[in-house]
Image (cartoon, rainbow, N blue to C red; front, top):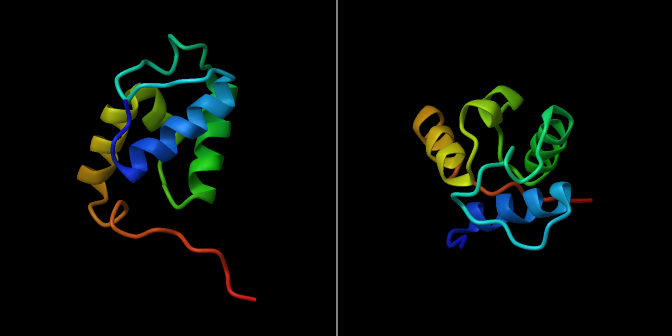
Length: 88
């Protein structure tokens, strides 16, 4: 099960996009019913929540664990900052 904030965030997004109740960090996105259209939705929802990665990365790293590992290796600061809502 997801433990970190980012694991929980991505698991929630995958759950919403795939229409399934629970997602584990080692579950394969495509085996759960993901496809190219859904991967675009995942990337968009993740960006809204401050996580930045590409559709290509979803295809290359098909589990939450592998995706977050790849993101943190390529962009070490991405997982350190949380996106906040704009002040109005």
